[in-house]
Amino acid sequence: MSLSNAYCPALFVTAPGSDSGKTTLVAAMARYWSNRGKRVRVFKTGPDFIDPIFHEFASGHPAHQLDLGMMGETICRQHLYQAALEADLILIEGVMGMFDGANSSADLAARFDIPLLAVIPAAKMAQTFGAIAYGLAHYQNNVNLFGVIANYVGSPGHANMLRDSLPEGIAFCGAMPRDNSLALPERHLGLVQAQELEGIDDWLEHTAKVLGESCELPLPEPVYFEAPDCNTSNFLSSVPLSASTYQPLRGQTIAVAKDAAFSFIYRDNITLLERLGANIHYFSPINDAVQPLADSLYLPGGYPELHLKVLSENTSMFDSIQRHIQSNKPTLAECGGMLYLLEQLTTKSGETTEMLGALPGTASMQDKLQGLGMLSAEIIGHNLTGHCFHYSKSDIPLLPIAIASQAGKTHMQERVFLHHNTLASYVHWYLPSSPELTCRLFLGQLNSADKVSI
Image (cartoon, rainbow, N blue to C red; front, side, top):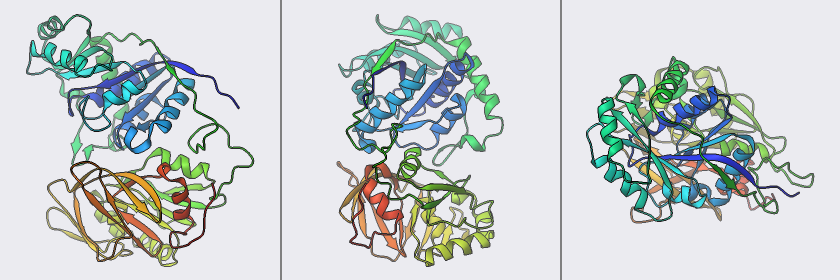
């Protein structure tokens, strides 16, 4: 089966650093163009779980992560190609500053030849605005910075001053006002989740209106996106699986926790599991009485520390998950999902709550970040990548099955445990990095010498 290449207007929204307003601007753009009848697909650079949900609300379509380090170029290319087939506009929100990290926003934009739009916070500057824009445009010679938006601008006169500071060749695309009604609430792991905010749709309409009044938003020129190679094994592609493709998880039901306490999960993980044949059954440890009957259990990360009372009082849910784990059924617990399985969790104020107790050990919330970065681990001969970002410290009296470690100078490490067929760690795993290990995990074969063919 041959695929044709695709063309679609695309824009990569970046900034000099974090807290510049990228998420608000991208969400506003997605809603602005959606309101004008355009099909918009939005991506978030990096292993972020929170920002993409705002973009899903804004565009009305699923939003995926793009990260060269975690996902690799092939999967990133496949995602962009599929979006180009379906959309009138692709928007990509960058991560941190434009050149930050080993796999920066600038690198990703250059790899796929996507023009960049920089959001520059300008509340306390004048002509320096032009110097920052010039630096972003010229720090690397492989990027195409066609324009900038000034953010947190105080007045029309301030906006004119910023516009006049720009060097030739960098377009001034508008100035967003300094306005508290455009701000989003935050907590320790980032923005408050979109699904928790009352009036999220009203906020999106308001930001889109302000954007339309404050900025010039012509559609960028179409970008060429190369068709993926159909000869490679690709479990994330929408290309139909052939009749001969073996699906090791066919007939398996995986119960996946999904609510306000457990919401940090990559869409690609679910796509992979479904393409491998699994049936996904979502449930809420907060609201449901028991875990649904399933062959395996997936407890992603999230904010269990914000819902300790209701989680601990749902003893029937505790009992049903205990039975699942004690029956030696496969379980994957990531970060907050792992904390939920421990014996106790202590808040920053010193209040200790009894947790499920399926995994020996305790944890306590800390004032400072305890782990952050991209990691990989070799687990029974397979390399699995993922990301961690947590404010808790745990004490788990088990020998690890593996150590997830970070490349580069920092050498951060996280222990990975296997207990009663439960794989637990602080790492949010990107399962497509090892489909075979994923199959073995959910088939309960991590302690087995059996091979899985996919």
